[in-house]
Image (tube, rainbow, N blue to C red; front, side, top):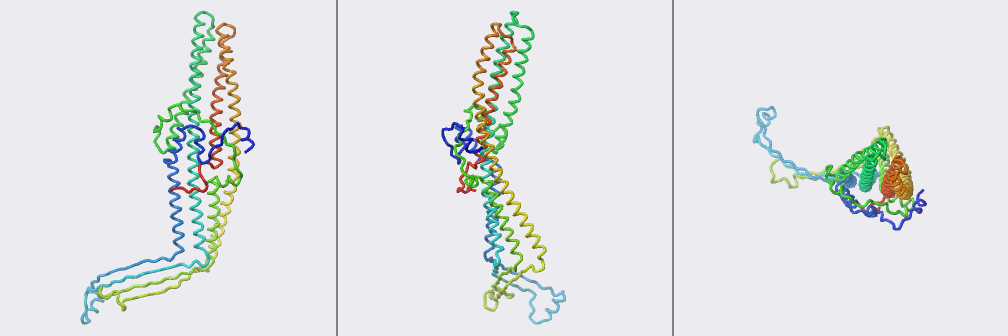
Length: 447
């Protein structure tokens, strides 16, 4: 359906995708979304995953650089003359049973990345980091959309509650009228029973709506990272019902791919899998390393530790080649290629599902708008019919069944309109989420 469906909507203004929740014109909803983006625990987990990926990238970068360490030791030795070695040494003139040794060394090592295994590992870690970065944005978008969706659903339930309570009062007034007529002998017993049963039927809808309201309030509190009941006062107060804003342009498929953070995550997962295949291939070739040691050692006293006679040095050229381990290397390469194929299939499926989500959300938005318009027109007509039937009943022109049917039709239409407008607003939220609204592709997370 896409753009053609949107053109059918009578929209007046476009909405900024970066702050799409402002387009609903409800300050309370904007406040809740802002709180969720700072307090939600799913976001805290995603931020922690980003920190882990950043550390992994740092380790991969460090692996390409030389490493150096300083080591030192000092020892004080006492030799017993009761041991075989002690007896031999004790027989020597000037034997000292006590001895000291000191040693200080500077060690350096560097693995030469001749065949690119370490560079491929760095590329894989960079892709993992970028995927985690986009993943944080995806969670942020999902949290904002879920908060807005729950808020709209809650206001929709509260609106349906108000309709049901008004209908209860209407049925009570009708029951009062029937009782008056019954007392005058103008209404039969079965009409009184019908009026009482109709009132009970309308009253029965209120508890179910109360349960739905409580569940939505609790879900919003948990989404905001707080215990259920924390924001009850804010959520109980009546507020303007959110109205679905206009979405006049959805952009090209290429723009959609750049806006959807989940697609960016899948894309970087493909790049990471490809780089890890390169890491596995590099195991076919030998690995070279350089090592060096420069230090000083003394077994007499600290006074001559750093003299020329106490100095020591060493150099090392290392070679490691898994020459007889090609079967394991082949298996690792096959595993990496399988993971790469899986990541590519996941990316392609994500693109298809993203397109599906956009089409479904926009279709629901347009059709729910149409449904609400029809129900609004029908509601006005049925209200007139209900008032006319009640007046005619009070004059004895029609029976009570006609009045009850008119009341039931009006109630169903009012309730249907409330649901249609709620679903239209929720469809707008789904559309903004499907379009990747709520972030800028050029922006970076703060964490």
